[in-house]
Image (cartoon, rainbow over all chains, first blue to last red; front, side, top):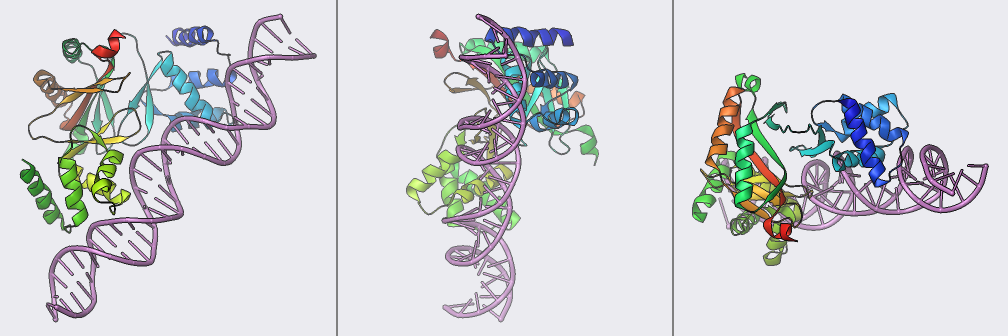
Length: 144
Length: 144
DNA sequence: ATTAATAATGAAAACGACTATCAAAACCAA
DNA sequence: TTGGTTTTGATAGTCGTTTTCATTATTAAT
């Protein structure tokens, strides 16, 4: 799984004529070891903790490469930070976002995906991706 | 319709103990006269053209009030600008966003809304709102 | 109406996330 | 190695947005 993804990046890099660098390897390793919508800042700190030399800009640049090669996807919530999540082939999940505690629950729904395809088709639209976020109060915040 | 919305804001302002000001009236008027996801900058320029004195910050501040009182809703696409759209009671639309020409088509789908309610219920989640955006190529960009 | 008290405003500075710049370092093909 | 090129990290810059704060406007009490 992880090797597969590394291969994915390496193939992409080769095809694009990018050089292989220590920094990109480190950032990929750490990104692959994370879960759920990590912000650039958080990833940067994780990288720094084991590799103090790596710079801010490199993390930003590298994440954009991950998006380009299909490894990652940008997610925007309402806190002004761009987050990146893993792209899992053949799977797409959406988010329940708690506006009180900012917790996030992922869900999948085949029917919604299908309906989206229908809607797009009706408008002559070719889907590249989508984003569905439901905002509200999670069960534990409701109880308070 | 427009009077209704003005009342909505005035009631909210009264309830919150906000003062009634010329600027807020102007901004509300102009916001109500616009359509579809206006950015703060665009609204600011519209306001400025008839009322040069009004400041940047006031427009930002006032739009937040509109959100608070349920007149407007924040929308984020991927261009780094916050946009505001009108909230129409009992109606919720979603967006088809063309990643090539940035055009936006709105759509509504009852079934998707229903499914969302089910999903939320299943997670003990109390929905406040949601956002569904489908990204891809619009029909005219596809043809090129 | 006048007057306080205080809320709202506008200009400008500050902020925070992100991007561009650029000299130095790393990479890689010859 | 070498030399040409890419990548990097530090730093400065950008852009949208928010904060600050002195001034102005609104409102309630006189």
